[in-house]
Image 1: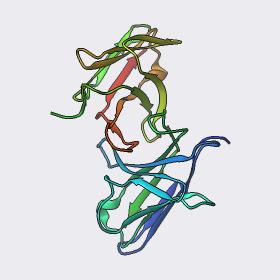
Image 2 (image 1 turned 135 degrees about the vertical axis):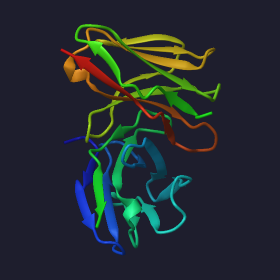
Image 3 (image 1 turned 180 degrees about the vertical axis):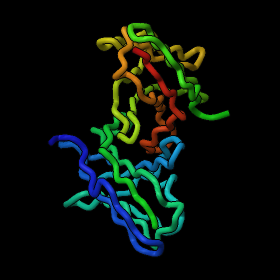
Image 4 (image 1 turned 90 degrees about the vertical axis):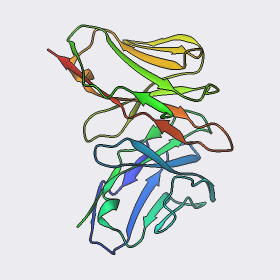
Amino acid sequence: NAGVMQNPRHLVRRRGQEARLRCSPMKGHSHVYWYRQLPEEGLKFMVYLQKENIIDESGMPKERFSAEFPKEGPSILRIQQVVRGDSAAYFCASSLGNNQPQHFGDGTRLSIL
Amino acid sequence: QKEVEQNSGPLSVPEGAIASLNCTYSDRGSQSFFWYRQYSGKSPELIMFIYSNGDKEDGRFTAQLNKASQYVSLLIRDSQPSDSATYLCAVPRRGGNTGKLIFGQGTTLQVKP
């Protein structure tokens, strides 16, 4: 499968736990983006990364959220001490370059008990 | 004023008709525009992108861009029930080195057999 791969597809956490979401970009793509979609709301940008660099994190909450895209391996979106309001669908997208079409993965549905 | 605006609908058309979906944007300098289709519970799927004024056709889909009036449209000819979905308009945020896509709220299309 040459598409954007996200895992897990579904993740259940209890309040206070950590959630770790993974994304492998489409083959040949080095630009990765994370978006969040809350129930009945639109897609909101969170962060834009290239290998080993965070380019734009203007959409990331200031606390508890972090992202990385290491030299080897997938991009990781980490949410510490999760709260009920973190329940959402988290989508990863990748592109060949900036301002190029972004292709989305299947998303991770995060549920907080 | 929202950066990207769409009528949330639902837009209901009979099977075989032309569905017309509209999107307006606030940044007059925007250069590229993307249309995504999102089925309920699924991820956004890129269906069209357009950079230049005028029309771009791909199968049953036509994207129309009018930069002077700051709107972009998506026409779906010979609409099928399988086209029933939410259609998202997205515009890249300009400035800096951001790859951020600004999404509209989406228009829900219902194609009735």
